[in-house]
Length: 458
Image (cartoon, rainbow, N blue to C red):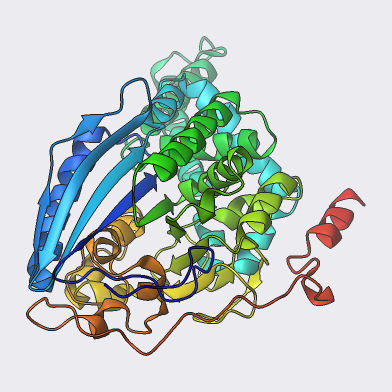
C-alpha cells in the first residue's frame, strides 16, 4: 500500500488499497427534509449498489439493516471488490425523519399559517430576491409553494362563485338573503382545503411548507429539538472517528442536510479539536445542497459562521457537487463566499465546486422523461448512474479510491479504472490547495446582505 501524506493535509495524496489489503470507510449520511422510512432507504441503497456494481464490473454486497441502540442512527455494511481491490464501508444514516413526521402531523391551518409566514419573511427581507441573483432556477423553485396555493385558491374561488350563483337561481327571488354568499364561501373553502389535501400532498406542497417553516425556526435559533438532534449526531461522529478504526470518514449532506452537516461538524470539533488529526481522514461531501437558502438571509449569521469555520479547517476536505438540472441547488454558486464561482478552482477556498452533470450520468431519454420531476432529479446525486461519469455517488461510498483523490481527478473514477473493474495506477494529479481569501476586501459582502438589509429597513 502506498503511504500518503498526514491526515491534516486532506488535499494531498492518501493511501489507496490494493489487491492485498482493503480500505475501511464510514459514510455518515445526513438527509434533507425527508420523511422516508429506514427500510426504504436501505432497500434503495442495496438496489442501487447492485446497479453500481454492474456498471463498473465489480461486486457489491449490502448487509441487513440495523439500528444503533438509544441513538437516532440506522446503519448497514457494504463490501465491494474488483479484480485488484477490496473496500469495506459502514453506511450510517443520521435520522431526523421523526421530526419531519411530527411536522407533517400538524393541522392544515397550522401548516398553512406557519409556512406562509416563513415564505413572507424570506420575501420581505430580500432573501428571495437574492435567490434569483444567485441562481435563477432556485429563485423560481422557491415560488413553487405560492404558485400551487394560488392555483388552489383560484379553484376554490371558482367553485364558490359557481355554488353561490347556483344557489341564487334555485332560491325564490327576494328570499335568498345571504344564503348564496354563505353557500359560496363554504363551498369555496371546502374545495380549497380539499385541493390542499390532494393533490397538495402528492405534489409535496405540505413538505415544502414544513421545510420553509423549519428553515425559519432553525436560522433564528428556535428549533431546540433540531439542535439537540444535531448535538447527538456530533457526539456519534466523534465516537466513531475515535474508535472505529476507519481510513476515512465522509459526512454526506444532501439538500437541507448540507446546512445541518456544517453544524454537526462545528459541534464535533468543539468536543474534540484534534478530531481531524487522529489518523482518520475527515471529509465533507455536500450535494443537492441548499446552504445559501439559509446563508442569504440577513439574520443567518450563525449559519454563515458555521460555513466559514468548516471551510477554514486544514484537517477536513470539503467538496460540493452541483447539478444544473437540479432546481433545488445553487448551481455554480459558492456556499461560503456567497458569490458566483466556477468549477474545479480553489480561488475562493473550500469547498471546491465540482460538476455533477446529469447528462453524463443518465441517458438522454431518461433525463427528458424526468424533466418535470423536480424531486426525482434532486435525488439523482444519491443514486447509481446509468453511465460512467466523473460524479458517481456509489463510487465515492463503495469504491477503493480516497475521497480527496477521487475529487482531484478531472474525470473522477473514469480515468482510474479499467473496463474489467480493476484499478489503474494513480493519476499524476493532486487537488489544488485552497486559496487564502481571508483578507480580500471584495469578498466581505459579496451577496449584498448588508446593503440589502439597509435598503429593506429604509
